[in-house]
Image 1 (cartoon, rainbow, N blue to C red):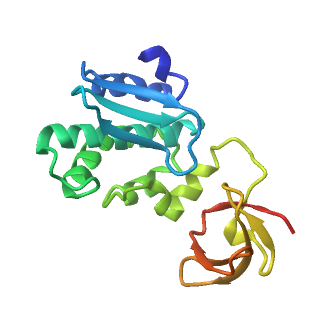
Image 2 (cartoon, rainbow, N blue to C red):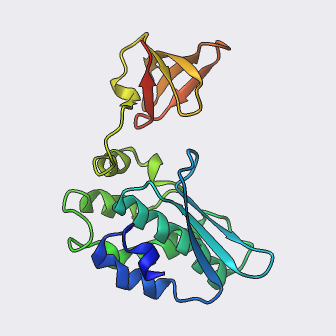
Length: 198
């Protein structure tokens, strides 16, 4: 497990993570990129528990995602199977597990205030916390994508699954995009990454 994980998380976080993963019924698998999720947790029919994490995440996002999924496992063990997936039991468990990692030996100083704010009430996905998501993306490998809040009005852009949109107005927090093929309007979070076509 140590060899498998050490290139994916900050080196200083490895001993604590290995302690959290010391369960004979818990398996961690590293997967190729999935566009709709960073990771997931599931209880398998044989009684074991499996966590999968995308291999393309930067070390800080990988660590947050891994602890997020471990929190599902710990919440299941502590509170049973009838809790909500991202309910108060999971939130409490996630906060408790994440606290020891929130220090400058593991995370860069510029991320710590955003992480502290996020973990007052963690969401089902760190991507819904726009400020944290944008801050984490600066540690990603460079790519040819543009944030939707940078797309000029009226421009044509495409999303990860190939669907094509025309840029619309900004709402209070999100941005309008009209799908070219259907004429239907969709709303995008400001940190959505898209490819400008024209």
